[in-house]
Image (cartoon, rainbow, N blue to C red; front, top):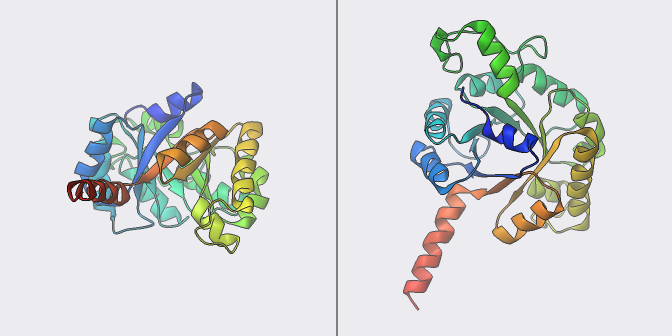
Length: 254
């Protein structure tokens, strides 16, 4: 595992910007790296990416020193383990509702004494046994990131409890799922959604975690960075590709 540059930058007080990747292609990851982003979130929750694709996308990320994070389909220990065994720098876990959820995730992410991650020295993350187990365990516990998605009202109510779990790095506000939770799907400017996201920023500041969120465009991204978000996921590969093509064809037809 190469050094986690996003963790380094966050510790230095910098803001990091990444992209969600839903297209199962290492080339997409390379393009994101060439463009200069800090990280890529390989999205297994929405889309068709499988674990073999994840491993090859992680390889592509390493070429560009791009931090690779895998959004697993759900908070299942086996999903978290397999994602990390590809050599990814961390996981994003959806729909975290309380401290118990957060604790289970951290236990799956970290080796003892911080957690109970399954042990095998023969995975890509461990250099296929070329790295000593003790070095692999300590490096993984140091470099891996635990990103927890807060996407419902209960998660907002339990923010302090979730943030207090040792081993949590980023609390990630999912604006679209939050809007659905409040009964206004898609209305990410609803006052309750905005309040929830600002509350997350405040709690992270008090509890020593990094706040993160998603933004579909530059204007909204800048707004939330200014508000204090440090881990910003900008749009999705398929959406960026579509918008670029649409802009081209519209300008050509003028």
